[in-house]
Image 1 (spheres, helix red, strand yellow):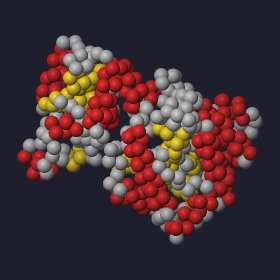
Image 2 (cartoon, one colour):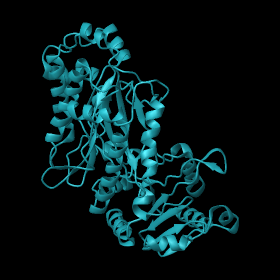
Image 3 (cartoon, rainbow, N blue to C red):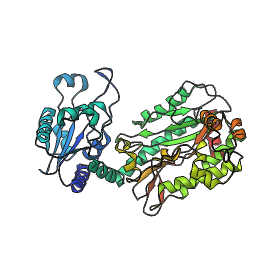
Image 4 (tube, rainbow, N blue to C red):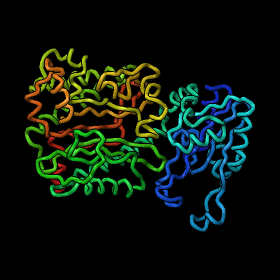
Length: 463
């Protein structure tokens, strides 16, 4: 937790924005895997953490603006719990650290909310991503669980997004720690992977690095020879000489702030000539995007500029043809780059994704429906305090090649004969975390080896 003053200041700012009503923040509960006492790793709701800081299950956070009171409702452990878990701070003791004066058992919170609902008081809450919390809102407020998100408060969503999007100095320090941990996770893999291992062997080394630093994973690790599958969580393949290995992994530090990095390296000591050629296109796109980062620039424009560079580079290599600007405008480049250039991050690796990309990443602007561009999670004008990823890549997706070729799609822009030769190439990307400053941008964490030469130097350490 940060100091109590941090949470008091955050809640005061939120109250000043909303001005009236009750702000309701259901905390997360433990989630059983296969029976009650065998639970998944507990993760508190990020907005609850942001405004209350208490990393403990079964809580209800309430900010009653009209009556100028703030509450945490939660149950203390009994002796039956303490026997198994040891002595734990009381709810009141936890509240003091968050700057909350009023605490009571959960049943009192339920009574408070039901009474407020019966009186017709305005109760603001955020969209819910867990079914158990949707059921709680049904029980407390009488809302049909199927309608819970439809009846969430857009006013509160916008207020929380605008507040959480701008990272404070202490938040940036935590994200920097997470990015440093993430870099160590990647270096561990680059210096460990060898032909004959399974993807699971490499994934385990990455996970071990996070756990050894008293951290955890910000998201399930992507560790694969099949980099063309953007979110590949299968680890059963044996890796061999001549293949590329793509790692996308991020650490989460004790405060729950996240890092998110990607790296690509040869399974053997060296890149092949073909791999160098494609990898250098991806790396040039990455460096181009980074060079454009500064406040006041729309991220969507940086994305499109990077897409144009990728398209021109792929034309130079014989994969594309025709007018490149037209090709990008129509989305033909998405054959190689079907995803977005980056996304916001902080307490969530895709920060506040449950609150809606249209607000987090687009400030209410309508998103494009064009294939490739519709996957861009961040498009808005960059402001000091924004933290996000830069992660262009080049992917050869056999099913996409077959589909578009069969449809005779973009034949004026794509050389399908050349694409056929690369159907088994896989994919590659680099990803780093950046902060927008008053004058430009700052890399968070530390530099990973990205050039072919530096990666090959590091790969020697695995043999």
